[in-house]
Image (tube, rainbow over all chains, first blue to last red; front, top):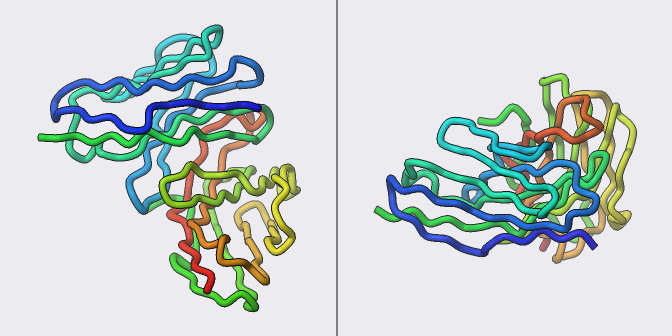
Length: 109
Length: 115
C-alpha cells in the first residue's frame, strides 16, 4: 500500500523555526501537499510541491525530494496561532489524495 | 469563513432516519470531494466527482449516496447509518487542470452524530 509517515507531535517555542518531516513511498505519488488544521476546523491548504526543491510562501516553506520520498514543512517566526495539526498529503493519481495522520504542533511562549 | 459552504454544521439522527448533507462552491472548481474524518485521525476519501460525474468511490457502504446536481453543488444522502458513522464529514473542491493534482479547498464540515 501507499503510506505517509510523519511525527505524531512536536513542541516549539514562539518566534522559533520548526521543521515537520514527512516520508512516503516513492512510487505513485504525483505531488505533496501540506494542510493546516486547527482543532474542530476544516483543513486549509498551505503549500505544495510537484517538482523537487523548495517552495516558499511567506512564513511557510515546503521542500520535496521525490527520489528520497521525503518532504518537510518549515514554519518560521512561530506564533501561538500556529498551534495546530499539520497534514502531509500525497496525490496518488487522478483525484485521489492520501493524508498522513498529521503532526500536532504545540507552540509555547 | 471558507469558500466552500457546508450545511448543516451539526446533525444528530437516528439509525432509521434519512437526511442529506449539502455542499456548495462558486469558485468554478470542477472536482468535488467527500471525506470522513474521525477525531484525531486524517480525512479519509469517500467520493470524488469530476465534471459532475462520479470519478472515485472508495468502497463506501451504500447507506451513503452521493449526488452532484450541478458543478456548484454536492450532496451526500444518508440512510440507515450506524453509530460508527458518527464523524466530521468534509466537503472539498479543487480547480480544473493538472489531472486532479491540485490543492483542495475544504468546507467547515458537518459534525454528524448517530444515535
